Length: 178
Image (cartoon, rainbow, N blue to C red; front, side, top):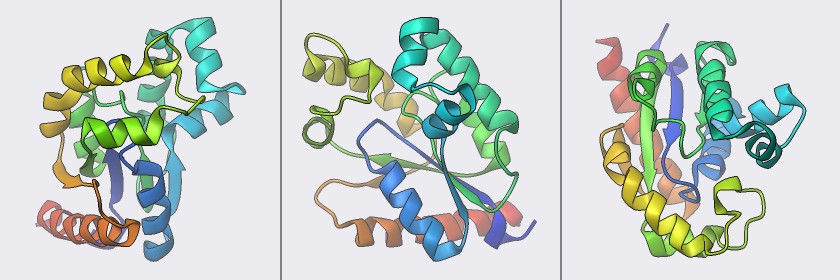
């Protein structure tokens, strides 16, 4: 495996730009882009919101683990990971064993701006989605900080964020190879 084909895993809270940046970088690197949530929907034949409603969050987390373990190519792809994928114990280490992990980060205010009107986010299908974001963010922030190099996405253009992520990816891929 060369530096140029190590997988890149984008992790972080919902609304931080993982899918948008992942698609942009996949085009630049000529990598395959995969969104873990969309791949789970494709293989299960139902939306994430439906999986949560019918089978529960625990089942969805099992499907995420299966996707990371054997649901995508071992190299040459960029994976936008669902916001909760790295929360269960051992997931961060699993991702790091499979490629470079970069955490996209944004303030709670930015996340609220980007997600409050989304209907495809099952964890926000509650009476007070803003409070749910704040609570989840507080629970997960320390986990995200320990996951990989953090790249801030607040008040930055997609082009600027993508360039920063690409620099970090290349540096970390090189050190992984060494």
